[in-house]
Length: 591
Image (tube, rainbow, N blue to C red):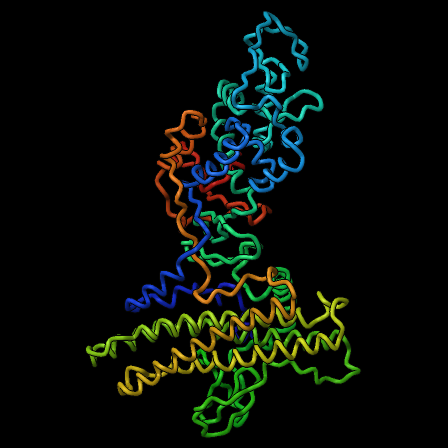
C-alpha cells in the first residue's frame, strides 16, 4: 500500500475550540447571555503581570495568621507546595513548632522578634577555619555564623544547582532556610547576574510547586499559567484557545480518563504500522464496490449509484433511499463474533481495530464539520442578501456548537470503551457477566447519542440559502430540538460513565453543557502590593521589570523540551530581552 493511500491521524487533526463555532455569526440578545454563561469560569489566568499579585494572595494569608515576615511565609508555602489548607491543617494538628521545623523556619521567626546583632571583634569561621572581623561575618536566624566569603560561595553554588528556593544553612544537620535578603546582599557583590535568577526562582515556585497552578501546554508557548479553584479532574481553555486537561496536560479528552487516554495514545502510536490499512480515505460501496470518498461530516453517505450506506460499518440502507428519516444503525456495538479458538493476540487486534476505526471516523467527521462552519457562513450571507428581512440565524450558532461538543464526546468515548470493557485495566475488578452487562448499558447510550449526532450533522448540511422561508424555519426548529436532545444524551453518558461504570465520577472531568470553561483574568493588582512597607524591594523591582517588558510574538519561537516535565514552561531560543529576564522563560534556562 502506498503512503499516499494511508491517513496518519494526529491529535491536532481533531482539535477545535468549542468557541470556534461562533466565529463569523451574528448573535441576538439571548445568545449574548448564553455565551456569557459559557465564558464564566472559576479558573484564573496567571500572566507575568499578575504572577506576583497571585503569589501575594497566599503570602498575605499566612503572614496575617502566623504573624510572620514575608521570607518566612514564603519558605513555609514553598515547603507545603503553596497549599494554604494543608499548611494550616498541619498547624492545627501538629503545632507551630513542628510546622516550622519541617519547613526550615526558625522558631524566632515571629514578626515582632529581632535577633541581636553580632558584636564580636573577631570570629573563627568553622568552614574555612580562618579568623575574620565580625563585620565580615553573617549569622542566620538559626544562630549559625560564618564568614561572608564562605556564605557567598555557598549561595552561588546552590543558585547554579537550581536550589534557590530552599538554600539551607551550611551548619551540619541544620535545616534552617537562609534569609533571602542576605542571599541577595552577598551574591550581588560578587555575581550580580545571579540575583535576578534567584528572584526568578522564588517567583516561579508559585507555579512550579503549586498543584493548583499549571502552565498552558500550547506550542509555541503562550506565556500563560492557569490556576484552578476546585479539586478533582478539570478541563479548561486558555485565552490562547488551547483546551486541555488540567490533570495530565493533554488535550481535553473527557469522558476518557487520564490513564485511559495516555494508554490509548501510546497504543495508537505503537500499533500504527499494523493497522494503517484500515484508515484509507475511501470505502467500497456495498452495491457497486466503487470507492466512495466522504466529503461531509455525516457518517450516512451515498454512492453515485444512489446506494446509501453507513460509513462506519459499510451497512447498506437501500438504493434510492432519501435518508429521511435517517435509518438507525447499531454498528457502534462491539460484537465478538470471531471463532472461540481464535488466538488471543489476534482477537485483541481485531478488537482494537474496531474501536480505533470508529475513533478515526469520528475524528475525520470532526475535521470536516469544522470546515462546515465556513460553508454555513457563506449560506447565511447568501440568505441575507436574498431576504434581508429574515436575518435570525443565531440557531446555526447553537447547532454548530452542539454538534462540535457532542462529536468530541463520541470521539473520546471509543478509547474509554476499549479500556473499560477490556482486560488491561479491569481484568480482576469486574467479573465477565458484570462487564457484559455494563457494556450493553454503555453501548445503548453511545448508539443513541451517535444516531442523534448524525441527524444534527445532516440537518446543518441542508442548503438553507436555496430553500423557502417555511422550510428554513422548519430546519431551525429541528436543529434546536436536536441540539437539546444531544446535550441531554451527553450528560446521561457522563453520568453513566462516572456513576455506573467507573463508580468514581471524580476520575473524569464533569460534562459542562456550556462547554469547557475559559479561564478568566486574575483580579489581583501589582500596584496594590507596591504600597506595602514589608515587601521585599528586590522581588518587587524584578517583577516590575518583567511587567514593563514589552511582549514579544511567540509565533516564531520554539520550545526546548530537554526531557523536562510538561508542567515546566518551555523556553524560547532568544532567552533574555534587552538585558532583562524574559518572564516567559524559566530561570533554569539561563545557564
